[in-house]
Image (cartoon, rainbow over all chains, first blue to last red; front, side, top):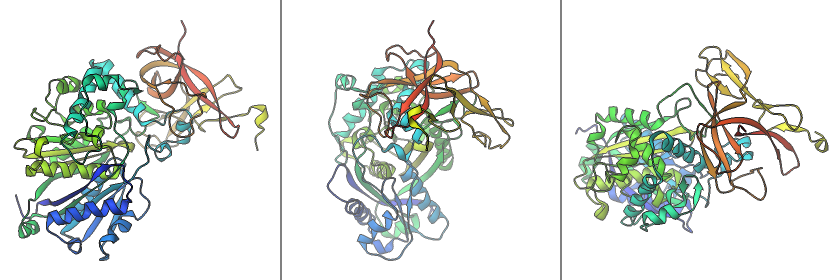
Length: 382
Length: 143
């Protein structure tokens, strides 16, 4: 621990769900909660970043002027599902530069029901030909994994079973209901082999972080949690389905964005996977979580199915994943998603997570992955 | 203004498909002189290495199914497939040129198998404005 460590001193979250409230209301709610948790006032913040994908231009300023307008720089950041990681990384860089010592990272989203607007990420010809449904891409990846490694429908369903079960203890999740394996395997197919109870929904939500230096935090008291790493990358050529790809190379096998980003984060933190007590990852669909185990190094390639089946990813297992219930239960208000993962991980590292607490959590990882092959990984340590 | 009554087809994407008449479709690609990588569509820059030394090529019409899914619900946006909506296969077909191209699959949704031989088929789509587009699908090679 050193004075120059960059820490999270305050967290705030507006529950994820569907609300008759504006982005300004839910955003200001989360920001105020984070400031209160940090023991700070809005006037203590020197720069702010808003993570968002669907909200219009200058949303950061529109939301945060409701707390007063001190005239600080407020910047909107967009990197699809990794927007929150990209915003947190900007805050870390700004503080590390020495220009500021305290920043607010806010993630806010308000999204329509149903499949995401295809025109935001697909070309017109892909829409015309029926290639504009996100779950189709995840499903093609799942089908190939099943073909190559023998991954089963039951193993995929086991991810959804675990995450729904964990969500019961998370008051900020949209769905807080436990489902049996049978319920999940009998829910309707969206795109083979992915089923309704195995995918996440678009919704509304907000989360906020007060980021500062350990030196400043130690004067204020509270429970600072160190940001050991925060990395964001975009998939290399032909390395990810979520670009969204209209083709893939059959000759070049670049590592996927999760593997690349995680490797950078482990290096920055000076840690390996064995040092991480718990994980929040991008389970946009249940299969995706299996592939993420493999790319984060929780198990060798092809063994993600057996890993979840053995209970190793459960709370109490060797590598607890998605203690919050994951995106499958919380929903994915895109801009707020990674910020809320970090809120959950700070809670875990402070030992405040009640019935979903991972005993003795010392270090934690958040991971998001989405359109454009955008991936962000944050590692925190108590 | 094109004469719609004569059924003139516009390529669903310029530089990706060409053909003559309703029952013809060819896929266009690009090959990089520098790294050798093949990509779909007519590109002026190699998507792998960034080289501008790149040639237009015609892609193979047969390949193998590398992966697929069945799209069970009507995709969002201006989907121009059959009305009323019918579940359809969507897959990546590995062509001998060294590229896997994504395409809708023609045929019974229970019939697809990874590794199966597939062939390019013309697919004509009608837009809401009456404009017809030259698109493509792949189907299992009939034995």
